[in-house]
Image 1 (spheres, rainbow, N blue to C red):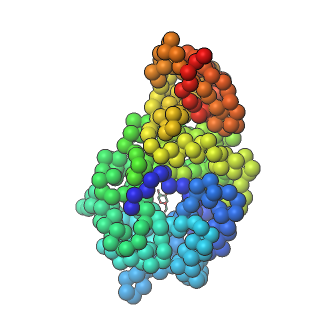
Image 2 (cartoon, rainbow, N blue to C red):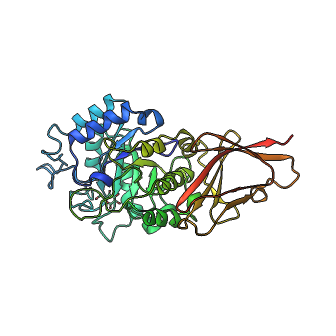
Image 3 (tube, rainbow, N blue to C red):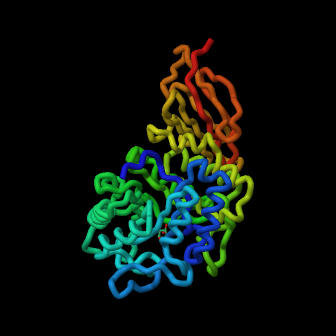
Length: 379
Ligand code: GLA
């Protein structure tokens, strides 16, 4: 189907991994609908791996885990839909899913039919236990066909972690978004590695097929023991979370929240609901940003004579660069052209002013500054 903007929603994996159930999903649906998330654009509620029984039924069909989802998946889908949300599920192009549940290899058409009957609007399709002789170009094309043949509009979210040069064929094989990286963990280094890894591939995304740099860890609690549910990591500071969310918005990645929405700090919630950052992420033209002169200055053309300008500081506090800087020459606003940039702080919504030749700002380490900009005539 044609997906006009990067999908936004929530996914169960980052915080809950295998520890999912009907009650959690219904509570999350309530919160998404009642606490401003849906209104802000987060419309897909996606159940990741570990939702099914370990075996298919005697007819070869997938079956929901009887203990986690005692009323079956259609019941959950109906509830999610009743809240005005869209419903997402998960499968895999291999023999098994990454967590060892039945995968869709050899069952693509019947599984797509099952997902359509349940009322699924979004399918995340993983890549574990893949049959080595069949390339991803085939496995993903096959599921794209099966979803289309199912008779229901289903967003197709490919997840092969950036392997087999996915950015070069994801669009041609009918996927709507493609995971371009390995899994994110809940710490700055993981997030930064992911951000860095895609800097030369941002232009492969555009309307209808998006570069998915993985789900958000904003608002997640630290977790450093191996036991229990959720992905590992000692967490991120508020500045690091700002960097993380702002970068995902700047590059137009899908925004899939990964925290426990029942227990999220006011700061993290405010960040994920920031209208200016979401406006940048969801811009209808879906243009990628580019590095403007300095390594940490990024500029993006938006619709409606607006632009996004971001400075991302990878250094620890006090490290390089002490001051972030953009010479407007780098974006075509040459000296004496008669135009300047009017900047609004994307985090606070405050007008910063009109600037003629350049702009400088001190960004703390592991943090960022983000602006919405307009080109204005200088008086
Ligand atoms: C892979 C994916 C993750 C998640 C897990 C589920 O690691 O990349 O996003 O879906 O599988 O097992």
